Image 1 (tube, rainbow, N blue to C red):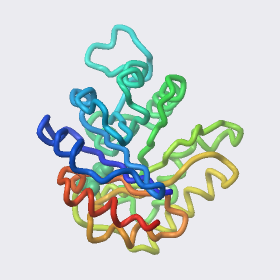
Image 2: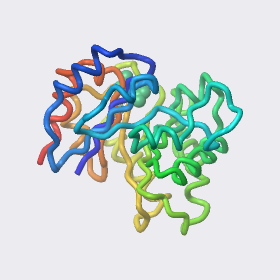
Image 3: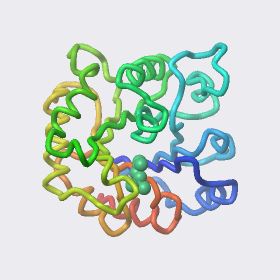
Length: 234
Ligand code: PGA
């Protein structure tokens, strides 16, 4: 079974919600589709036959945190997943690994499955293993920590929105590295994100050990997103 996860970022509107509600293929056993729209659109997906996720949440369930999204409420309005630590949040909102781990803990507590994004910048390319190991340190420190089926998304920052995709071998190596340091006996998944589209998805999805893809811009066009879903082989 492969995950195909749509990250709309701060894009989309009611029209796109309707297109997606009516336009994406029926679920198939080999594929789990998760759509992560902006928070303001989540409740418009009433009756959606696929799963929903949020793009971020706060590290407390409730309180005086003006402007933040409660993980508890996200769960109540129908989210099953939450993206945490996307590179845009790390870069623009200065989110640290420590903060992301705090969010991970509260998301689990509220019954959300976290999709934790990690990845190196172009400048860090030659030390990508160190970067990933540091970003994963909290999840690796205690091997008895229950990961609750967390999805780790390897998203090299230089490939996000750029059309540049690492080679199949490079993705395979990164996924192998991630699974190696987290440990094979634990309960989690590893997916790839960064310029995935309908033309490259079947090759990417054929990578050994890869559990799916996280899709940004190509998830905003129903035909492109359907092409990715359809490229998952049974
Ligand atoms: P992209 O974005 O598919 O547009 O490269 C991926 C992401 O940021 O999750």
